Length: 411
Image 1: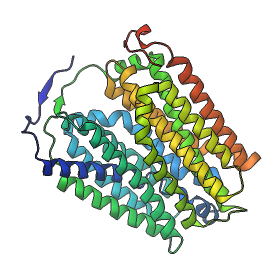
Image 2: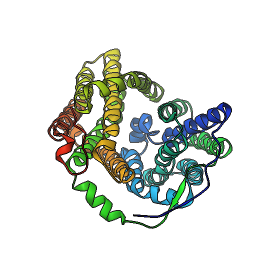
Image 3: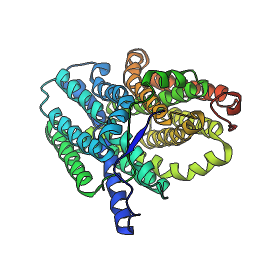
Image 4: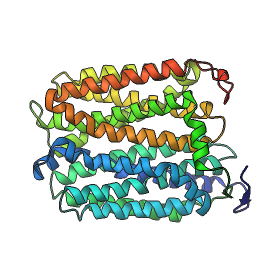
């Protein structure tokens, strides 16, 4: 077992004012992490016209970012274990802001895709380490509330990034969108440095068991494999839907511009609002049932988007993202049950599979678009949603006690 050296020693419990300051800093961390992650989504139809490129090519501005996240996610925890939580969070947020500003220097798709890939590499240093910070620093209580504030920050950040790019690109050159987002990210990094207290309960880990042996243990656990597959399907659904619906809404009969397309992401706020109350349903009815119901809602929403009416499509998008958010709550909360040891590494592997799903979701529907347009994309997303229900029904339904790494039964 690895040894550990305390760094620094625990401090007295914080005052209410200090708790509020920490909570606001955590919210800014979530805001920074997701501000630019999907910022090019409202711009895709415009980039397609400007660069005379195909849908799958311009979608690489999303794929490159999610691929960078997938690569860096399992590794960033080891860096944070050596350097400390706050230091990695602030450095990562600063580099994330810098790489976003560099997006504005892009003269073509290759350079834009490269800078977007760098954004993906720096992103896990903010969001993944923030989760570890909350778990450690709110050990005296209130971690659930702190995570809720963090999730709110991620939703607002993702929504703001899309709205800013849509608004600016509808009035000025699209490069200015990344200048504004980069400056907002820099302000968030400053807020982290100024407001986030130094960690009190962090322990620097000494060298222990190899990363590969821990990964091997998790990859032999069928319940975790099913959970990783569910994560793949969830972000595939979200990215595939919101990437290609932009092309659908820019075409007949809707013909929406960048600002109107950016406004479609108001549906995210609906999904974020309905998700917390559904957490009680997960506790009451079980992870498997909650995920199946969430995906069922998402399938219904996808079918509604086929109706050529703007408000029906908006309703369908709201149902789809609500299903993904609720499914994400069910899936991430199940990881702690499925992994009896090495939970941090299990989360890292889950994040990798989650963002690989997002990368594939940004590209694969584009190939089907050539043959069947939006209808073909909807069919593919529904297929992935159905497979997610099937896989978790088969492997999550088996009692955890029948495997060597746990004891709790799952409904």
